[in-house]
Length: 328
Image (cartoon, rainbow, N blue to C red; front, side, top):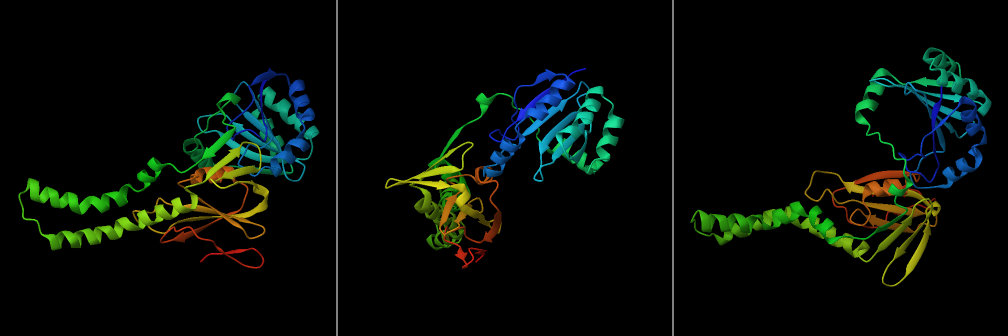
């Protein structure tokens, strides 16, 4: 029998692998032994953006998968997924690459019972519950990407007017609701126009419209002149303004704070993320500039906290002498 072998490296996306190749057991074991686990694990630990862990994945003819990776304690972690309508998954830890040889042989032979018993006898073993396997099966959007050509290596972010207008949809709707209703009543229904009623209606509806407009202006003032460049696989990024260009290292930031709305108000789609440097300096990124999902990916290994505000006006956070962040 043969095994399908794929690899992941720290510069890969979570769903990205090398092309699969068929190998014998001896070739698979040799791949595990010669893989530079130390270097790749070091690269992984230093990279701030969300990324794949150095991994070797083996799959037998039944579809059972064995993912091998190096954990934080210089041992090897093993994820086993037994194929089926509801795949069964488990996580184990073994001491050395030599310990994996028998496990690889059992995978190749397709002997699921002995393979599971072998892993259950390892240093650490956790079997996922049936419910968790069901949730993983139907909730995950698992996909595999083998081609490196589909992966972007550079990212440029700047505020887009169309994106801003879409976030202001409800504010614009409330702002023009009174004139539209009044015109409809006068022109279509032939009713008399009452200026006082119109002004009161416009005033009340504007209370729902103006906060979003004010927030968007505030975000444009802070980020509208920025262009932010990121390059995949590095910790440096650039902020370019009409006046200067600054280079930043993600490792200089110890915390990120996401400020989002605390209600279902019409302006609740506005958010911003604050990056706090060790020297106390703060950078604020509106989600008009960099979407929150991209901030999670690009700064995935920096501790994040979330604060809720009624109005997501960009401003500095209060920092103590120890550089800890207090929600205000």
